[in-house]
Amino acid sequence: MLLSVERINVSYGRARVLSDVSIHVNEGEMVFIVGRNGAGKTTLLKTIAGFLSPEEGTIRFGSDKVNALGPEEMALKGVRYVFQDKRVFTKLTVRENIQLAAYAAGVSLSEAVDKIVQLYPPITRFLESKAGTLSGGQRQILLLGRALIGDPCLLLIDEPTEGLAAGIIEEVFKVLEMTRRKVSMLIVEQNLAVVRRLADRVYAMKEGHIVAEVNTPEDIQNQTLLEEFL
Amino acid sequence: MIDTIAYGLTIGGILYIISIGLSLTFGTMRIVNFAHALVYTVGAYVLVASLSLFNGHFIAASVVAVLAVIPLAYLIERYVIRRLYGESIDYAIIATYAVLLIGVDAIKWIWGAIPIPLSDPVGKAWNILGVELPLYRIIIIALSICVFFILELFFKYTIVGKIVVAGLEDKEAVRSLGIKVDRYFSLVFVIGSCLAALGGVLYAPITTVHPYMGFQVLLLCFAVVLVGGLGSMRGTFLSAFALGMVMAVTGRFWGPAAETMVFVVMAIVLIFKPIEV
Image 1 (cartoon, rainbow over the protein chains, first blue to last red):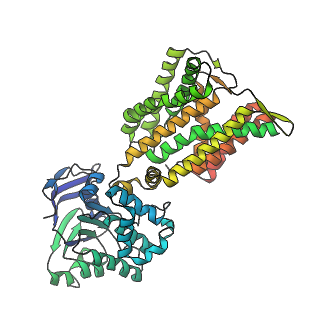
Image 2: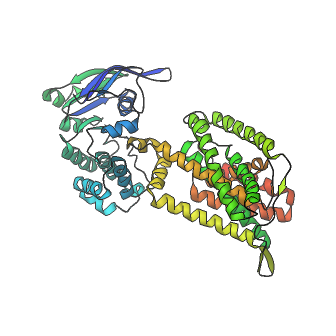
Image 3: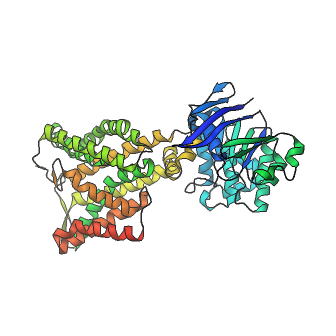
């Protein structure tokens, strides 16, 4: 088991946001989390990424207990968090965005650029453009590529297709498909079409709890089962 | 009028050099740092002390004064500022103001409270269109422009600069890459403090060195930073020179209103472009 979250509780001040949440991700797996707004999906990803600390429960990465690690330490362990809202560094060029990730991962810039070009060849045209001028889809692909630099073990991806047009979602889907099995992924996603095409397993969340685990291909493809949770 | 413009540019240059650290500290750490005025004052006093050590050699004494504030800046960052990350802005104001007050009392204890005048270190003037302008002021203007371009190059071409630019925009995203961005912000804090000390050094021969000199300049620097945009390096540069000119031109026609007019301009800017803290 690559990631194991065991009965964690997380609060913002006095407000309990996650209650008794347990999930796991195996090596090479693509696991999705679905649920309505406010269900606690982003909080769960942020807690695993090290931005929040659980008050109770345990998070294990491999055999290590990682409850107290911050996001920098988690990133260096190979856990990368891809924020929602396409948060690229808009004032830096695309190449400079990649450079920061390469610097942090200790790989050369040319190697890092090559890796992202392999995932999405059209990005070569934008390398010297400010990242703020990219479209939403291009930003998302840059973020995914940036997170993949340095061969991480686990990507935590928050709503990768949110706000994207259908054609662009297909581009993002291709990138996710290309990296499938090379790296484990835990993805928060509301677009059930994407979930059905890619998921190995799905967790459903409601009001800070895990309310279901859908782990058979038949159930994942079931047209009504997952919709109950949205 | 030429001397008014030269005076405005001189004040603008000094305000820029002092304000850039204040602006970067707010931009990177979201902390309003009143202790910046203490570093500025200490810079001026160390200059006074070093001048006697170096037989009046201004450049050597200035270098010592700028470098001498590094340990002070480190201590303020490590033991005050770093504990205020993520806290309410009120705590930062109270804590750094307390540091300023303690520091000013320490200065009075060490050097006394009597103002110390310094003479023009260059002592030459250039004749521009029939007006004698002190060469020292022209050097200050040139130096502030050099500082601007050096900082531009630093933030554009070095990895540390790029990390800080990225961190100014989205600190969490930089952290998620595995970069301990607070270390880079600390470095920026020390650089900003050295520039504040440089401002104190440059302004000392124009005014007098006294324990409360930091209070006076601090309010002007806040006006510069607010008008230029919190954390905006280019905005701070333009704002410093614009407000320096406002001070100089107002002072030419109505001396007592020179500083007041800076805050009138600040108020007008805030009405049309309120800050988001």
